[in-house]
Amino acid sequence: MLRIEDMVFQRGETGELIAREVELEGLPDKPKVKIKPITRGKLQEIYATSESSDGNKAKSDIEIIKSGLVEPVLTDEQLADLKPQYANAISIAILAVSVGMSQEEVSNKAQDEVIKQQEIDLKKN
Image (tube, rainbow, N blue to C red; front, side):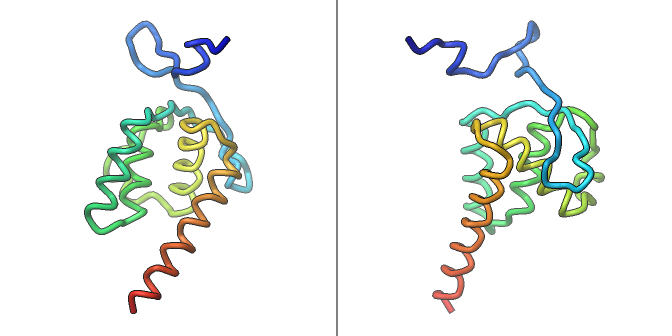
């Protein structure tokens, strides 16, 4: 029988989603960060906002990181200055935890989406 505990993210006593430490598999030294999952509704909100504006992936990555990164704590200014390889690795780790996939699967899916978007953009021109 399907259990509710298997279907929903667990929350702590304060009502916050429970964070966990994960390795950033997309970086050579595989540093660890503490992240919490992002709910389906929040993910939909982030992607709807990025698609309705200019479709900027960097903006959606920053929103994913703001929503899911617990440690290290970054200011808005530091998020704006975040190096692309770290932004990608952190956002992929958060998405992987949020959707129940491996970081490699999320990374491959993201690459497929980028290629599809590039093909669509080329057809427009």
